Amino acid sequence: MGVPVGLNWGVLVVGVILAISLAKTSLPSLAPGHPSSAYWFAAIIGVLGFLASLTGHELGHSYVADRNDVRVIEITLWLFGGVAKLEGDADNPGAEFRIAAAGPAMSMVMALLAAGGAWGIDRLSGNGVLVALLAWLALVNVVLAVSNLLPAFPLDGGRMLRAVMWRRSGRKRQATRKSALIGQILAGVMALAGLAIVVWSSRWTGGWTAALAVFLFVAARSEWSHAEARPELLEHAVGELGRRLPAPLPAGATVADLERMLQAHPETVLVAVADQHGRITTVVSPDAVMRIPPAQRSVVPVASLTEPIWSLPRVHPSEAVNEVLDRLGRGRHWRALVTDGSDFRSVLCSEDVERVIELATV
Image (cartoon, rainbow, N blue to C red; front, side, top):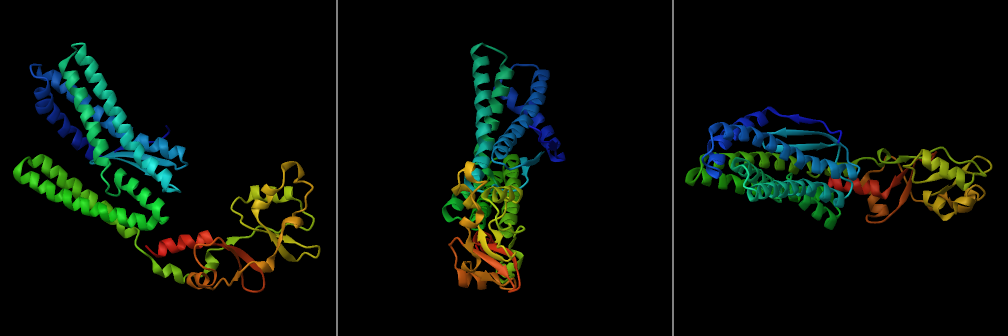
């Protein structure tokens, strides 16, 4: 898939421990009566299968991320599993949910394949060590899927929970704070459970659970702190948020000229139109193009679709975000010209201001 995959040194440690555990304990108990060499050979294959399972889990994320226009930089396998490093978060909660769910779904598919292979070989009275190995791999993938579905951010289940809360509230940062807080609470519960297992059952299982809990708590705490409110952003000047206006269209420009300009400047939200004397007195929005059939765009003048520039609200570039909000309000779709009175520098969009509000509040 064009995604580089790397191994952290911790995976080598886990691989050695896993091979010893498989060859000495797990496989002999599941398929007794075979020579030691068979168990060791199967253990090495099992470690490779374990790494393939981790890689498959992360490739599930990567495939769906790519389908949702989120680039995957790399996959790293390490002490507690694998991490697919994405270029950024998804743009909407639906894509976030699908990307997060793809990993556990891929693990369940691999679990079914391994379980089906074990069942088929057992029905054919095949090698008992191979049956035991495939059954173990099936169990590993089930555990990988179920553990990642825990609603603890930044695990897959926590990201799915964030996506649900993000869709309901419309505020990604608030959803991140809540899901990361739940992640910290679950990490505390896991740590207590790990200590209890150490005391009353298995030191190895309990210690591993406690170590995983510490990792989860640190990761969740980091995400929780990163999503902290930044109220000082509301004091920033709106001049920094404005979107620059492209060069104005001349008098007599057609809708086809407007369409070409928008193709060259896809982020444009308003286009200024000059009059016969070169003065900017009107503006036109990009949706004007869609109101004219393609066959007529080269003959319809833009001037017939413009609105006077004085009809738009104006903000001074030195005004603070909260001052602009007091005048223009939240939850409304608006465009405002950023001007110091001498010229029109840029356009302030309501959606850009809403993003600042999300960063400033939770």
